Amino acid sequence: MKKLFLLLALIVSVTVVNAQINYEKGYYITNSDEKVECFIKYVEWNNNPVDFNYRGSLKGDTKTIGIDNVKEFGVYNRVKYQRATVAIDTSSTILKNLNENKEPKYKTITAFLKFLVEGEANLYLYKDKYVPKSYLYNVGSAPIKLLVYKKYLDQEKDDNSQMIKKYNDKIAENNEFRKQLYVNLKCGNNLALIKKTDYKEKSLINFFNAYNRCKSGNRVTSNKKKKKGKSVNLNVKLGAQSSSLSFSNPSYGIDFDSEIAPRVGVEGEFVLPFHRNKVALTAELMYNSYKSTTTNTKNISFVSGGLLNADIDYKSLEVPLGARYYLYLDKRGNSKSKVFIDAAVSFDFQFGSSFVLKRSNGEVYEELDIKPSLSYTVGTGFKYDKYTVSVRYLFDRNLFVDYAGVGSNYNSLTLMVGYTVF
Image 1 (cartoon, helix red, strand yellow):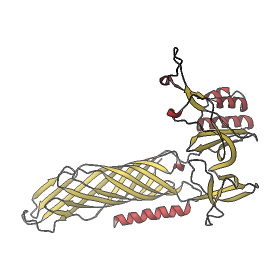
Image 2 (cartoon, one colour; image 1 turned 30 degrees about the horizontal axis):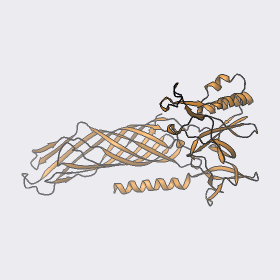
Image 3 (cartoon, helix red, strand yellow; image 1 turned 135 degrees about the vertical axis):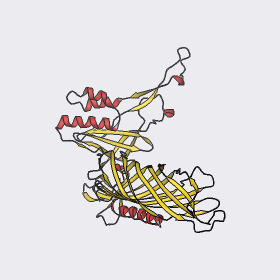
Image 4 (tube, one colour; image 1 turned 90 degrees about the vertical axis):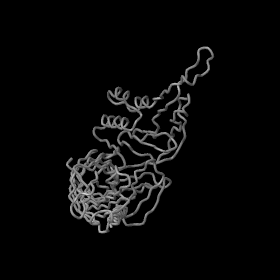
């Protein structure tokens, strides 16, 4: 029953989100310069797309349109792409494939280039799995050009034979992009900044923003992904847990009743800086308890009285380490309202626990030390701003790992509310 309840909760979570979060407000511009407002399926393209899905309205039919028919498209407050025919460098960046040629190996392509910075000078990104990541630029209405950067082998020769020695090869860099910045984007005294600029996204964005501020005041638009929220959160949690236990050894077995107990703890959450902050790593410290008494109803011939009473008082600190995936409910991807699914490896450290078997007359028959095994959890929940409601299932945990031939299945279903302190 517990597993069925959790499965239904997970199915509902995924179904609700898939129905609501895929499409966001955007636009595209046709070859005839007509701007069409629509809803675009925003999937955070890892590589520059060649087409995209859109709808005229949120509940409208899904259509696909490609690079042959679109000059520009964008998702408001997210991303913007412009079609352009440009020359890119297709030289390999893999160490074993580097050669001694410092000049780029050009190839002309037509692609949707991603805006990183807009202003007097624009910075673009082209990314494809078959070629190195490329940064391109233009100033005003000038053609878009590649910022040139290439790694190559600077080979040394033997003084006697003049033969190339591969083991003396050194990796050199063609940093022509800095010359391009100096010649075409010089403003004020920015030579020192040019020298410090690397062929990396963050560094280039900083340079282009500085140039645009120099040329045109504060009129600058950066399409660098905005950080949504903090990277680290601390959550306090409180709830109730329904747990059950079955115990067995080669001679007999005992089934305990399901018991409800309070559960309280704290959770640290590290939000990873990609995929719109949907992925997080979690670490928790939770107080866990289970207390129950039962009687074995089957007659045990080798025990006087034929019956055994079993008492368990199990207390522990549970430490689940896992991952969480958020799914936004808001059509615009507003991170305030979202559902999530998570999974974790659960470590458990018992303290002050006891497990006692007694004869029907009250005499102690056997005492076992509790030492819990590793287990796993899955869960789902809803978060609004700083408040969270979640449900989680703990798969079977053996509480008696130190005893050969003795086994147990302890599992639980937990309902919790939480609050993000910071």
